[in-house]
Length: 107
Image 1 (spheres, rainbow, N blue to C red):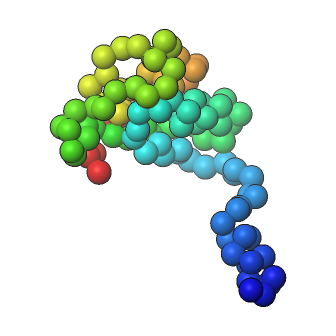
Image 2: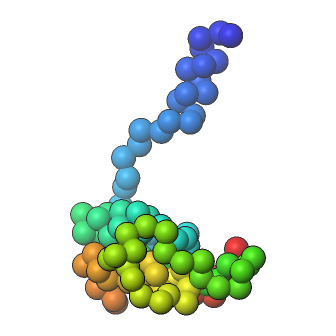
């Protein structure tokens, strides 16, 4: 295979762009704490004044599927992805008025 093709593919897969300031950071729902923890860091650095954790319940199970990491820190009974992510953000120093509520999405 031509080295030029491999280089082009690599350049499209592995981006090295630095984050830039935005109006809001969207967090797609989930069960792992690393996404909202990283968003909290970006908030504190000043990349965005607002965070939008999103997510209701799983389409498949009809409920929040539970915390999958750092269960000793994030140990509440969460009803939605939004509740879990909001708790992570709050425990990482993000003020509640910087968190926009979206707890109804399901996929």
